[in-house]
Length: 227
Image (cartoon, rainbow, N blue to C red; front, side):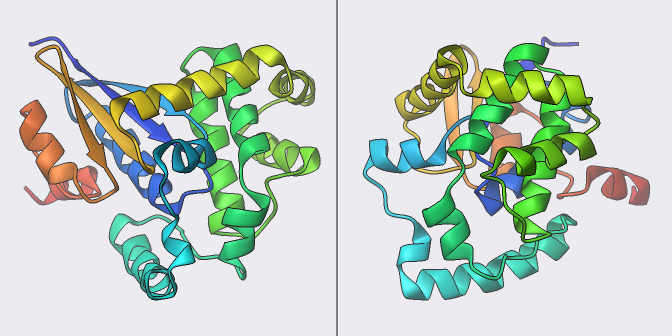
């Protein structure tokens, strides 16, 4: 078997399209011959650093995005439902505290399942249950659902405000910008020593082609069962 290709997934839990990309890549990490590296970063820093404007600030794009997410939720089988006030959630409250918390989880765990579960529960809070992710109690509730203990959560909340974790998140965000990021999700496939960057949650077929794999749809286990 050829060596596994490294695939980096840059994401922020404030981004609904990142949730779709995250779930698909998690489903494919044992289907494709890849080494998936989760790279939690800060979307606000990406937008500022790239000089990009969120689609939510363009009325027609915002209207389209709301309809699009409803269709995509069904297609990807992700329980995504826009909150009552997406503008407040995404652009007023933001996700800095949440992403620092995720970065702390990853720093402590070093790429295990806890960062997957915590990220998923934070997405679920915003994009399925219309709940807050900015307050420590909100982060704690998500972490409990993700299976973390009370002592772990207390330690992680303290870590999330440390200089070390702040710099980790900043560094990962800058790494995404260095690859050419202008939004999330962003996936970087390392092919023959070169990084191939893909933006969005609708480039999986092309990505599969580039890494020599087969795209079996958003739910590969279902597709395989039909073969």
